Image (cartoon, rainbow, N blue to C red; front, side, top):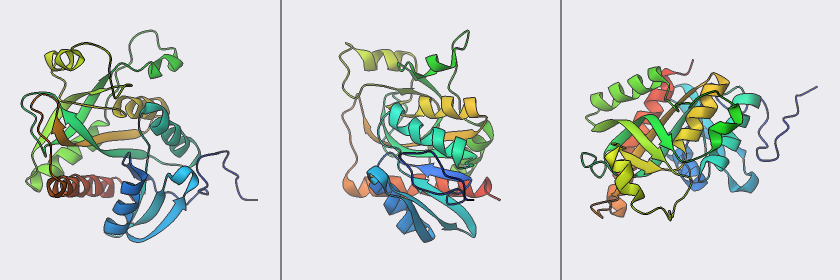
Length: 242
């Protein structure tokens, strides 16, 4: 008898999803990634329009699925992927707002770790402060691949915020004072979920705007930046796929 996966949010069956999954926040971006970069992509999920696809990339099987916005949405899906679908690694492919002065538009930020104002880690009852950290092997591989492609990277700590609109005065200045490279909304939760499960995770972030300079990418520049990030993500996933 086939295994019934107890998910109300993913109608994929065991075996439908590859060992490594790329996760943009926007489900329509997941659809675009699948149709642009994967050969013979097959859609494995449409529930809540959170599209997921599996296809071939350079002869290896890779999946891509939207995560939605924020830690609660992303980690709901990631918990299920790790627990019920045999996924071994997640690579977040998202955008972020630059904070540190050295981070420029179109830079690829590779999140080594993530500070956060989320209470997500409290569920683990850890007698201390858990540090959300990337898988080092994935991080090292992604940085090497970016260098080989001539893509500028900044590697360091990002800030994962539970609030898109913050009522905290001077919050961004405080993040900058602690040398956060960029701000986004998922990485810390993804890393904590992966660490607890004993799996791999990496967050690749394309800088689409800068908090302090007010600069932002045009539509064409966003597309080019997105392409560079996806090339690094796909080639990294390829190296961790049998």
